[in-house]
Length: 123
Image (tube, rainbow, N blue to C red; front, side, top):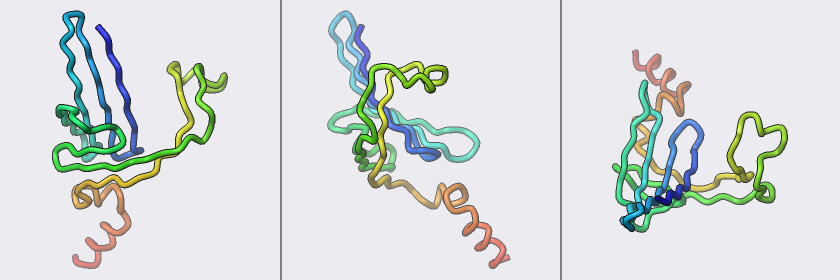
C-alpha cells in the first residue's frame, strides 16, 4: 500500500488535505478533506479530489485559492530546536492567498469585537 498526502493549515480556520492511496491490488483513491474549526467541534467534509489541490478547490460551499513562498530552504530533518516537537520533515513556508468561506458562520471568532459592538448597540 502506498499513501501520499499534502496538507495545509490555515491557522484557526481550516485544515485542507489531499490524499492518494494505492492498495496492493492497484486500486487508487484520491480524496480531498476540508476541516473547519467553527463552534465546539471541528466539521469535516470529504470529496473526490478530481482537479482540486491544497492550493485551490471547493468542498461543501467553502472555496479556497492559496499560494505561498518559502521563507527558508527545505531541509530533510527538523532544526535541532524543533526535533522535540516536530518529528516530521518540515519546510518554512509563508501562506498567501484567498480563502473564501461563509463569513457569517465565523463572525464571532474572526471579528469578536465587531460582533460584541453590534450586539450591544442593538440591544
